Length: 402
Image (tube, rainbow, N blue to C red; front, side):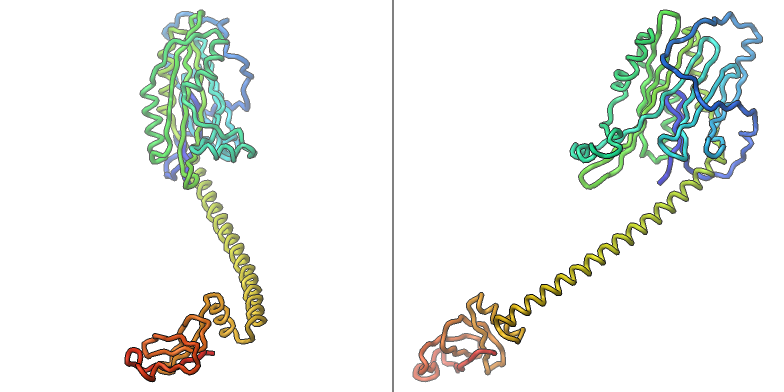
């Protein structure tokens, strides 16, 4: 099964990858950013405006245009996953998280910069949804019952999670906006890497406070469906929110800079090779486990068949014993006599054609012609061939076949 790469600056950075392309690592032989192990605690979204920026001179504007790459690094292997370039006067730190996959990180990112810029994303929340309500009942007592939740809209996520947090921090809702450049870029990535199986829903909201600041909060959700059984379908869905705060006069250009950092990000070919190798190992392990499961199933089936053969043999022995006790030692005769008793029939032998026939029981004599027609008779002196011959044919007296 392929694994997919999604790297969203505003809402989440879900890093896995697919493909194995041979390309140069020269794009990653540049400035080595300081890598920080963790983040400072973020108890609220209050913005510190103790520092105000004066009007920028020519030198400040020139410095601001310079970009510095930030590496998103896998803590397990030390390999750089990807790199994005930000203004050199921004401080960017990232921390890999392995809550979704133990070997493929999801990155939490924090940014601080001039004009009271602060930006961060929230941890990814993962859920599984089902079409059949009965499946939720079955999953209620499972160890991962908190994962099972019907998929909800982005608007509901905003109402339940974003609104309370922003209002508590003194921000009021302004409007919903679209970020078409960013959305088109991400949609293109998803289509290229998932073949259209993974879908995305993205909503961006604008906020402002009475201190001259604006905020952008983007909720991004990705989801994919797959059949669970012939009566149900499973939907894996996950979402994250990305918060960005900056002075109102610099809101538009900051949003554009963040978009450019994402769209121009570079994936490390070495990481692609590592993930491709990891996927091959996982596929081999899955195939091996499948073979083991099939062997276990076959062994269980063979054991069941062996057990059933023993049961059937015992039943046959009991049946033969019953027939012998009831009708004698001849199994064929015993069985036929038993059937005749149930059907109230007799089995007779016709010497004309050498065949056995079934006739109604409880008669002293049976006369039969060459076509299998028979006459029942209880008079021992009766002969259908004397006097008026019935049907002008020869009738033969038949007796029991055994």
